[in-house]
Amino acid sequence: MTHRLRLGVNIDHVATIRNARGGDHPDPVRAAEIVAACGGDGITAHLREDRRHIRDGDLARIQAATGLPLNLEMAATDEMVEIALAHRPHAACIVPERREERTTEGGLDAAGQHNRLAPIVSRLADAGIRVSLFIAPEERQIEAALRLRAPVVELHTGEYAHAEGEQRALELRRLSDMAALAAKNGIEPHAGHGLTYDNVQPVAAIPQLAELNIGHYLIGEAIFVGLEASVTRMRELMDAAR
Image (cartoon, rainbow, N blue to C red; front, side):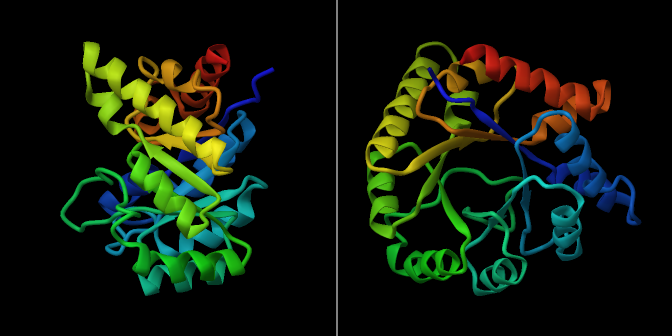
């Protein structure tokens, strides 16, 4: 029997809307509470260098609001390591970050940044934080994660999400192959980026995947149908794919 696929909901863009006018509304903590009430399995939040959405003060409030595990997306910087060590989230997903980008584009070059990443992964792991690397679905990146002793990789699904026809089928095969390779080597594979109601099921059907992290699409749909309804529908589609 295939295990249940977990759904982590990224609530960054609730904070983006809040920050557009300042003040406290809409509160990402309320979003976390709704996700917990309607079957979400975790909360993902990206604390960026420029604090464009989630702010430092949000982290402790999110952790206190629900019993769901917090997955802190973070750049590989000394500042973010210290913040992670102070808050002790369930997981820390190391992502590439460039100030000029609108959102995280592409995967972390774990293979090319081994010496930079190794002490960061070790410090987080020693603190009991489950480290994940957000990487492209490539064999060399899986091998790098293995050398770094990262227990989790999150496969970037953006190329799959943006592709069409035969190219999408090729990208799906690449995701499937790399999820299998990660699992074979004792690394838990997750996936995320650009997933929607229309494209999630082929990815959700990959048996080795343990978790999908989805944010922008769910928050966008919530404008029209509400957050509970958008998360519930995604949960239904994921379950049907399994």
